[in-house]
Each structure stands twice: as structure tokens, then as C-alpha cells.
View 1 (cartoon, rainbow, N blue to C red):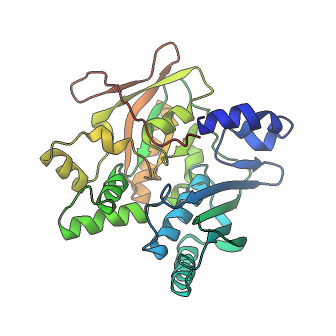
View 2: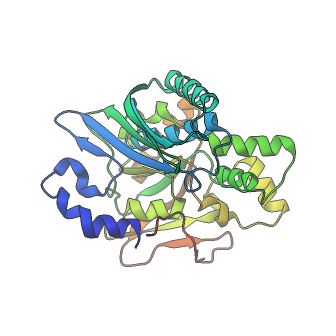
View 3: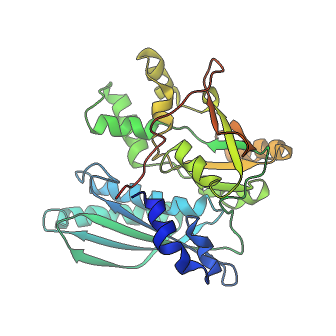
Length: 319
């Protein structure tokens, strides 16, 4: 059973009397009266991270992916709680020291503070992170408007290339391997952009499960569709050169997720303020398509103007 089917069938009804739960259809809990915003994420070995040979990098990756949920809502994270399950092989003194040092570095970088958690023995390695922020408003899911432009920050696909290198399915020169592995372990978060999003974004989400999967989630309760131009989806210069020289399919890289860039929609009237904002923050922004009527199916248009189908839109948990 699909993870979202489980939520809808077994848990959504439990939240009907709690408006702060947002019908379990967003990435956060939001109590407007208390200005409280909370997200919860669990990360499992071999599912959310490839291995634990670099615990210092793994813990940075999962912490950043967790606070990314708040940032794309227009909220700066303030506190986090972390729980971990592991055994003597994974929770060695050396590994725990590396994890502690990495968390300290992330706290200094993003201005966040550890505030509690739990540790349990298990032969299955996992981490759960609760991220907390404070805001009188958030940018909700499912608030896109007909004819909105669709934007993404940064570049997509670098993280997936890093994963392919980790799995030894791709081998490049040393400097390129290093570049893509860094993009996999250390996603770039635009925390300075958080509060600015309220000036133009109608709706937003972070790209965690894949561009098209997250686009579907962005409009899943609305009678809308999207039209995306593949040629407008941004790639880094490094990935672009490899895709072209190896004759790889661009769509296979931009649809795999783990990018943690911000995906949002905005009125065409906001184009000028968007351009000005991103230029002032020195953040890359790309307009990749627009929101269409729900009377037609969502479309992906390739470089030749043809509609293309995609078999694997991104990551899902199936039970």
C-alpha cells in the first residue's frame, strides 16, 4: 500500500477535529495562535542514506533535509529533537563523536539548537528528527492558482549523480566525484530566503521525493494540473556536460529527488519582485512551467516540444 494511501485511509479522519494538523496534507503542523510550526521525519539506513561509512556527513544530510521542511514554508528553524536507534557497530565512540561534532557545526551554520531526543538499541540504524520554528503564518501546500508560474531554486540532479557514484554505478574524475558526493551529503538550503517567500509564493514544497512527485503533492487537492518544460529545468554545469557527453536522459536525473531545493508557484505579476529578490540574495532561480486547468492532464514537454511520459516520477514508500 502506498504511504499516502495509508495516511488517507487510516489516519486522516483522526485529525478532523485538529485544524492545526492541516488534514495531514502538508509537511508541517501549524498552530497559528501559538505561532508554532513543527515537522517530523524518520530516516532509515539503506532507504534514506546509502551507508554509514561517513556518519558525520550522514547526520548533516538528514538534519538539513528535516529543517528544509520548515524553510520552504517560510519559517526559520529554531530547535530540533533527535532520536536514534543503533547498536555497538554503528554507535561506536568514534561515530558518536563525529555525529556530535557535525551537529555542532550545523547548529552554528543554521542558528538552531538541539533540545532533546532519545537513544535506543536496535540492529536497524535509524534517526528521527523533529524540527521546530515559530511564525504567525506559513506558505501552505495546495494554494496554487490557475496560470501561476512554477519556479525552482538552485540546480536539480546533482544529488542523484552523487548517489550513483556512491553505489559505484558511475565513475568520474576525482574532482567531479568529490563535487557530486558533496551535493548528495550536503544539500544547499536557502535559509535567507525563508521569510522572503511570503512576498510572492502562493504555495511551496521542498524537492525531496522528486520534482514531479512533489509537483503532484503540491496540487493534489486542487482541480489543477501543471505544464513543465524539460529544457527549463536547471542543471549544474558539471551535470549538464556529463548528460550531454554521455547522452544520458536529463529527466532521469531531475526526477529522482534528494535535492531539497524549493519548488513554488507565484502569480505572473510577481515575476519582477522574484527576480529582484533572488538577485539580491545571489540565489539561482528558474521558471520551469505553469499551473494549468484540471480539465487537462499534467504535461512534461521535451526540448523538441513533444509530450513525454515518465515511468518513475520519484521516491515513494510502498508497504
